[in-house]
Length: 68
Image (cartoon, rainbow, N blue to C red; front, side, top):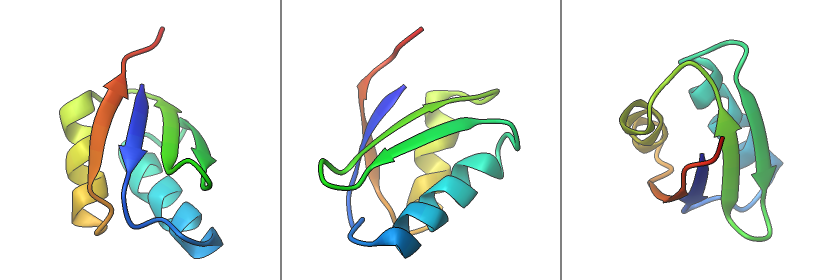
């Protein structure tokens, strides 16, 4: 899935977002594009779980697209 994530501005943000998603699935693929504020992720979790995990970490997100 491709997410637009707010509040990301530095590598600490990247680490926090990655950690939040990998808490749902330790083997999740997480690619962060800091300049665009986008996160591409794939793992054993649904969109709602990913959005909730990011919101809990103070990085509100919206779904841009679902990808295979």
